[in-house]
Image (cartoon, rainbow, N blue to C red; front, side, top):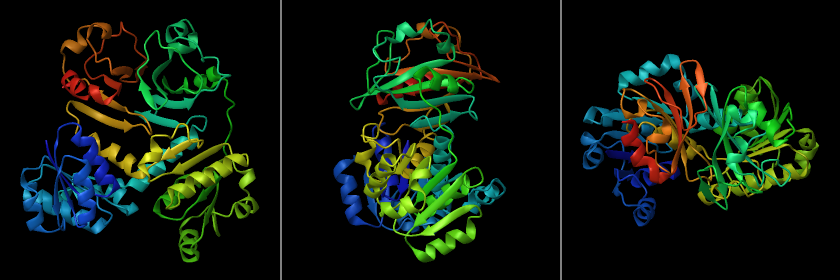
Length: 446
């Protein structure tokens, strides 16, 4: 595929990096020469220096032959204009990154379609939705929902007291709880393992389970974890993501937001109806304690500094907060997310990139979810025609060793399949895959 990306910042870089591994033809357009030089030194992509709203620059980037054009600069206006021009020049599919919340309302979708923009995405809104899921399922560090929660993938780090530690996967098959639960991945020493029957669970493994909606509580029971009801939440930071997160949470929880800019606090307090907005230095832990930190069940750090977010989250944990979520922009931190001491890390550019990459998969792909710090992704495929995958049980399909069929949604029914399961037309298949499996899977489900 020929793909043109306008914007070589963190999100554009991450998209280009993901796609370059898959032998896509990538062109990156940006105004900053230093940024493009950095990209060129790390990735095998074509770079063009210039303004993405310039017709000449877009023509030089060969947008007319692009299978996809993605405008993901930090300027909303640039993204919209560039996307409209790219469509007019002949790009087949066009995506624009936006910030304005009104643009994301379903009733406004038609305006962008009429302009030729196929999809719009807001990293802040996507991130807020993910934080909401993390709060709702506070026992787990990672939460991914498919088909409105019919199937859920959750992650958690196991300690020495967990009953699963030192057990083989095959030893769990007789347990009734595992009828609706399956272990689909293990992260150990920053290496991702697709578990097989002889795989042994170890202390400090970060384990990913898939289950149906009802069985999520069974995972908590299985692990012997205490379920804590979250009522009080403190958010630090005041940018767009902090605002959208508070907006999403304030009707169900008691939310306190702390930010150090006085004018921004006024803006926030005028728009948030049920959130207590406090003007103060969020680096001052004594101030946070005065504002009720030790009474909070959840702490969400969304400042502009990854280091501040991590340190304040660790401090919150030391003061008895049950659930700490930190936003990180620094890519290196994401790879150590499961050993850093914070419950959950989140990165809005990676969340948005995961949303975009599902449009690039061959076969009928309905969702793609990357996992923080894990060299794997979860892909939802649709079985669109009767072929060999619908005629034989999974164990006879020569499925890639670096992937696993985690779950199947068939109409209103959900299944956690074993080797004897046979897929059917219109099944929605949830697959966890390491990078080496991508090409094989696209052929498999094409």
